[in-house]
Image (cartoon, rainbow, N blue to C red; front, top):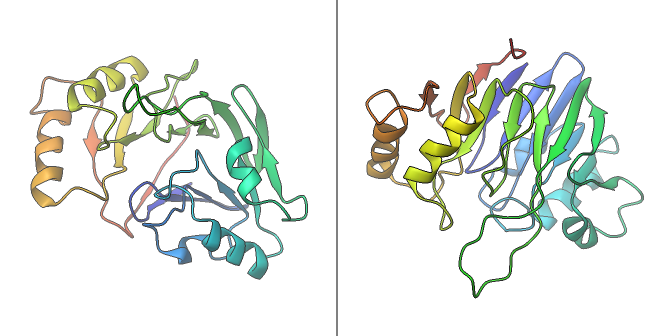
Length: 216
């Protein structure tokens, strides 16, 4: 498989059988969805979900389907059965890839703010995108897409999270609000110069790609 980093929290994963896109939100180039077979949406925050971009892509590409939670699906009503509601423990296949769903809730930002549904996607037993949560799947993960910056976590929590998941490698996502100083500071704590997570860490520039394989 090939993984391409798009803006902020979005990645595109391509196999020999097709392509899927995770969290093409308002900070993402809409072309990330071009000719995709599936869009997977973790939750309804604007930086993960753009109703306008998805509706346009659905209109242009009759093959495109969406898998997401009930709240996002409600905002895409009228899409002719091409939007599928999934939750923790569900499994489905698309673009030749097996996908399982993990987690239920967005990480808490503040007690005064209600939490929303957030689901994570494990792609082909290899790549895990948790959305805005620190969900630990009950299975091995080869590549963890780590949300490195948000109002709901500290870098210390991320270190412990990587240790708990214990992936073979970590690739940074959810970094669209960081400048160069911020990305350097975060990397200094999450890579080998920090306290140690047991997993190699790297950040792809927007538009950059890397090959990823099966766990084990």
